[in-house]
Amino acid sequence: MSKVILRKICEDDLVTFSKLLSDPQVMEFSEGFVATEYIDTWFESVASQYASSDSFGTFAIVLAETHEVIGYCSLLRSKYTELPEIGYRIFPSFWGRGLATEAARFIVRHAFEKCGLSIVYAQVDPSNLRSIGVLRKLGMSFSHEIKPDGYDYADQIWVLER
Image (tube, rainbow, N blue to C red; front, top):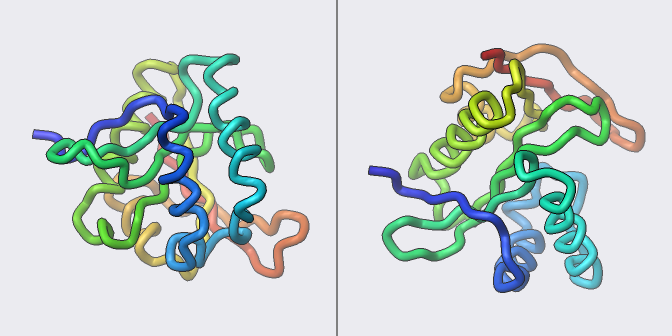
């Protein structure tokens, strides 16, 4: 039985995602915090992805047992490479339970089966060992490093082919 359910995000998720994106532990390995005043813009941008496609987008990760939103998982076109990128964030109180891995497995299956993609990738800070652990459990392999404009360090690119 699945521990998590993925669903489209809705307006009710705004407060939860605002807390998630302002959590220092969650954002430790990210480009930076999403400032509170920009959460609405971020949320509108994420929500508008559904208007252009029912395949790519950001999905709320919901705990099956309690129906609590514990994070989000996404399949997006990378702003750096235009390749299909998976991503995920969950609240620290839910780390270490395999929930991010389960949600990411759903996204990978969605990418391959519903979207017909033959490859997905993830971009990760090499210090983010928890996230690298999730990628390994998904069967992804390290491909190369990338240093996007404005970054002080190189991120790792991990790939999974169908």
